[in-house]
Image (cartoon, rainbow, N blue to C red):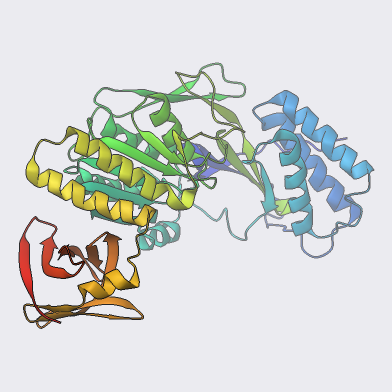
Length: 450
C-alpha cells in the first residue's frame, strides 16, 4: 500500500529547467524540526521512501499511464531482490532513479538526497542572494564572446539563467553580435535552464511575435503558450544568418531553443542529435525522508510539429561530431556570406578566413625540398628551416614559426592577422616573399641572399 504524500503547502524556491517554478513539499514533524534520514535504512524507512516516491509520480507525473508502468517495474525489481541489499539512502535514490528512467525513458526524472538547508528561504523568494552571487561570479554561464575573421560572431553559453538576473548579460552579448554578418551560438555544453531566457534570446531573431512552444500540464486543459517578445534591448537581428552548435550533451532548454529555430527554419543546426529532454519539471523536497523528487509535470509541444523532442532529441541539419561542429558551421557561414558579398574589401576578409578553415580541415605539409627552397634572406629578414619547421625573423617583431596553409602560403603561429606567401620561380626557388595582412595591406620583399 502506497503512502500518500501529505497535502502540505508548497513554497516556491527557484525556477528550474524550462522556467517551471521549483516548489518544495515540506513534511515537518510535530516539533517543527527537520528530520533527515542518516546512516543505515531500516526496512520500514526503505519501504516508506519507495512508497512515497511511487505515490508522488502516480499523482504528479505528466503521463498517468506511464506512472503506473513505472510503479509496476519498480515493484517487480523489489520482488526480484534487487533492493534487498540496498541499505543506504544514496544508493536507494540512485536505484530508484535508474528504474524510473528505464521504464519511462524520461531523463528529467530524478530521485536524490536532499541537500541540507535547501529550503531555508523566506516565502516568496526564488533564489537566495548567495546563489545569485555565485552565478554572477560565473558570469551567468556566458563563457565566450568573439568576433571572427569574415565578420562572423561567436557566442558560447552553458545555461539559460533566470532573465531577472541575467538578461543584462544576454543583452550585452547580443549588442556585441549585432554588426556581424552571421552568428554562431554554441550550445554544445548547455544543459538547459530557464524558459523565459530561451524566449528572451530568441526574440532577437524574430521580427514579429512568434509562437515558440506550449506547455501542457496534467490536470490543466489550458496550455501555456510561450511567445517571443515584441521588443528587446539593443538592436534585433531579424535577418542575421544564424548557426547553432549542439551535441549529445545539449539538453532541455538548449533543446527548446534549437527545436524552435529548426522548425521555424530560422537557423542551421550543426553537430549531434541532442539528449532528448523536453518535459518541464517540478522539484519536491520531502524533508522527513531526506529526499528530493524531480518530476516532469507537463509536456512541451511545438505549434508546428505538434510534438516535442522528448526521448528522441533534436536532429541537426548538418550532422558532424561535436568536436568539429564549430569548424563546420564557421565554414558554412563564410561560404554563405561569400555568395552574397559584393564588396571587395569584405570579400578579401571572407576569403582570408576561408583559407584558414580549409587549412584546418585539410592540413598541408610542404616537402623538405620545397621548404628548403624558401630559405633565404628577404630584405633584411631571414627565413630559416629546422626540425620545428620554417621560421621568419623580423628585426622589429621577433621570431615567428610559419604554419603551412596551402602551397607557398603560410600563417604566423602567434599572429592570425599576418601571412606570408612565397613567389617561386621556374627553378623551384622562392625569389620573393609577400607579407599579407588581414586588412588587405601587402608588403613585398625581394630575396636578397641565401
